[in-house]
Structure formats: C-alpha cells, structure tokens
Image 1: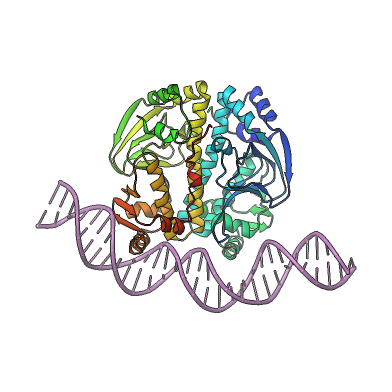
Image 2 (image 1 turned 45 degrees about the horizontal axis):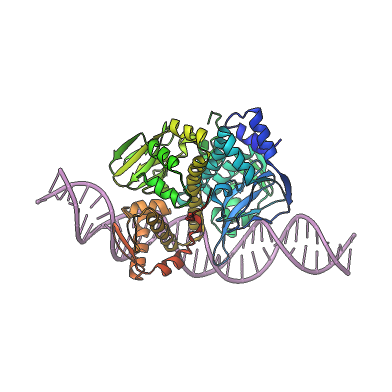
Length: 238
Length: 238
DNA sequence: CGCTCAGTTGATCAGTATCAAAGGGCGTGG
DNA sequence: CCACGCCCTTTGATACTGATCAACTGAGCG
C-alpha cells in the first residue's frame, strides 16, 4: 500500500474510492541513490513526488555554498505536493538515502481537486502539516539552545516514523550524517558532534549511526520542550 | 474590496463568481486593539480570520516565557486559514496593531471546497505561500547573521506590502517594536537595537518607527541574499 | 507631572563558529 | 587479503556573534 494513505489515515478516514484514487495517482516509481537531486530550485515540475521508502530533504543553498535543510521527509511524505499549486520550486529536494519515490502527475492531482473535495482537503492537510513542522523548526531555531533543538528533532522524527510503522520501542534509523544534521539545525558539524556526545553521555540516547535508541523519552521531551500537538496525529473528519 | 482578492489576483485570475464567493465568505468584521489574542494555541476555531487591515502575528510561547513569532501577517493575509483542515491550533495568533479582521466561517470554506475547485486551489495556494515564507525564515535563521536576517525581513515585508498597495517608493510602515522584531528574528531586543542602528548608520535605511524608508535597495538585497522567488508573485493559472 | 514603555548604551559572559588536525570504518583496487 | 583513500567523526585551541545584566533616556499619556 501507498504509505501516504497510511500516514493520512492516522488523521482522517478515507473511503475505499479515495484510497483507490490515491493508489492510482502514482504513475510510476523512481529509484534514486543517496544524495541525488529530486527537483532543483527554479524547476517547474509536472509531477509531484511521494516518498515510498527512504529519506529526502528540502534545502536551500546560499551564496557562499552554505546549505540549510528546511524539511526532512520520510516514508509516506508527499515531498513536493506544493509544487502543484506553486508551479515554480523555490527550493531543491534531494535524497539523503537511497529512495523509492512515487511519481504523481500534476494532471492527476488536478483531477482529484475537480472530483474529490474531501480528498483535496486531505492533500491540503498534508501540506499544512509540513507548514506546522516548519513553524516548529522556527521556534526551535529561534529560541532553543542547540541541545534542545537536536532533542526536538529526535522527538519529532521518532513520532513521525512511528506513525508510518518505521519506528517502535523508542528505536529508529536516522541515516543522516552529522553534516546533514548541522545543515538541518543551522549549526556546524563540529558543534553537532559535541551535542550528540552530550546526549549520549547524559544517558538519554544510544546513538550509533544510523541506529538511534532513546533511553529516556521523558528527559528528551523536557530537553526539547516537545509538545506533539503540531504533528496533528489525531484522527478526525477534515 | 476584500484585500485577499487583491493579493491572490496577483498570482492567478479569479472569475467574477469566485470574487463574489470570497466577498460573501466574510460573515462579519471584528475589530481588535493592539496586542490582543485572535486565537490561542489549543483552540478549535470554527472560523478563519482574514486581515482586512493591520498587522498580526503567529507565535509560540516557550516554557520560560520566551516567545517566538513564526509569521507576520498584513492586509490581505488569511492568518489562520489552515485552522480549517488542521482543526486544532498549534500556535497562537495575536494582533500587533489595531486590526480589522474578516471572520470566515469554516462552513463557508467547506462549501467552497465542495463547489469551487479552482478557488479551493487558490486558498490552498495561499497557505502554501505561508509555507514558503516559513522555509525562507528557517534559512535566514539557520545560515544568516543577524544583520542579514533583519535585512531579509525588510525586503520581504516591503514586497508583500507593495503587492497589496500598502507600500511604494521603498517606503512602508512597520509598526513593530524592537521587542516584536527580536521575537520574530530569534534575537534579543538589545541586539536588534544594535543591528537596526547598523543599518541606519550604513545608510541603507532611514527608520523612525513606524516609518521605514529603504535608501539602497540593492545593498539591502545583497546583505539579505534576498531572492523574491519564494514570494510567488507571478501570475499564472493554478 | 510622574508613570510606563520603547529605545539606547555599556560591560561582561556564554554559546557556537572557526581553524586545524587526528582517528576510525569501509569499500575498492592492487 | 592487504593497503590505500575517502568520508565521517572526534578532539583541541581560539575567535566572535549575540546574550545577559544593568542602567539611563525620552516620548506619550493619564
């Protein structure tokens, strides 16, 4: 099953027809190796991309080559659904690991918006959840120290992976390098290394890349000031 | 005319019927003084709010009372349109100045999604533009020094205000205190004060709150590494 | 006329960046 | 099967941006 269905059924019910429409929306599957571009800034995609398996990110490059990752997308995430109404990409999307990607033509998305109002709201919802995460990242970056910020990212990724059955028992795979994490958190790799060690030494996590095990969820949550509300994990009619 | 129509007609054409539907979507007008709550985190609004006039912000509060503003909304912005699919607010919305707000019942939004697919995509687009701005803020916060970050905010607000005829000739009103700015940039008020002075002394802006005049747009853009693409100011069918 | 709040200034401190270099795991080629 | 090379991680020393603490100014307003 298309994991986007799994993800969204945590938040709302889908009819059999809607599920079928989503399944059929995927025109083909694309496999990319790690660190390849999915779309580049300035592109005008004619398809949107759904992560069937693997980890991708959205990123922006700055003048002097610095990179900022603005979102991490895992199984079930519709990475660039927003390119459908937005038309022109204002950032790039790249794989972090080997990925299986579902290609969804904009024409099929348009057809959905013409024929399936509720399913349209579900697609809309999925982009709004991305927006919620963006806001939460802004909060972390603006007002949390580096350690809290990293702790927050771990909490978020654990719950998101759990929601698509890719994490359980406080363990998950985090196949990012410390440099990727630095670009995500807006820090330097050196500093990321130091705070990872701090998390390890304080006994909150066991972290042997790519395996992360959270030993003390409550402490991690406190460090992060984590409140899962923004993940909108509750099921209700939309 | 409802300024949201003005804003969106910069990005796509609306039919007379669609414009009428948007006009009628506003059930009533609410006037709030400065620094009042529009919605609070945890609320389940039954209406969404459109800024007819004034400046509002979305914000999150942290444990020790710190505040992070995640978005600034001006005339024509649909501040909490996302509360319609999202249902529960994961952040608060407050006025920064006296505001006239249009109240749009979720029931009417739902009716739009059932009957007007193109208009639905336009509403969706408006929330996606918010997402683009969020991402750009993440980039600024993560990879730009404080001065560039402030410069970026000025560039963005100027163009956004210009798009709704509230700014021209590089002049606009920015009725935020330096404390508000600090909460949006993730800095302290003291440091904001210092970088504002730096901008003034380098002759890039004349800034006598609330009046801002940009003297050297090109230099401001260079300081900010500003690229307006993310504002999606281009007109095209969505 | 005094209060309050925004803005300003100065001194010092802390967190993170920068620069430099060494260690470790893993795949590839010899 | 070993050695080399590469990338990621780790460590140390130092620099700098922005935070903190404290106090003062000035304007608006009751």
